Image (tube, rainbow, N blue to C red; front, side, top):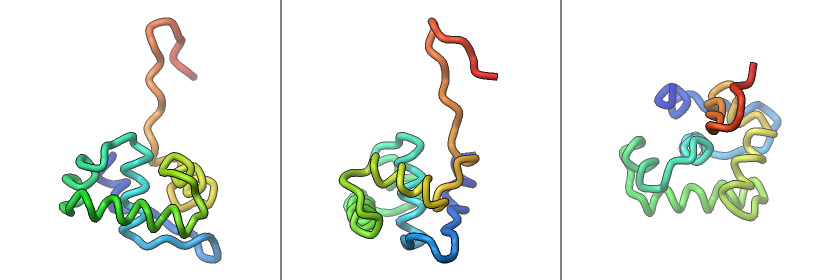
Length: 96
């Protein structure tokens, strides 16, 4: 599922725009991956990942990567269906 999410980020027409590669990096960040893991998954250098995150933050007006992911989800750049469901801790019930 994560590989499909990397290859299919879908910016909506008329919405805040990020490049396809920036969207892929945001998907990796949404999965909680480290920059090095995103770089490995996409076959790029970790410094390139950092640059894509920086540019995506600028385009979205985000303060940091977490804010950028939240704005990308809100704008439909990262479809929420591609994100994993949270795993409950030992003291919490599984959501329906």
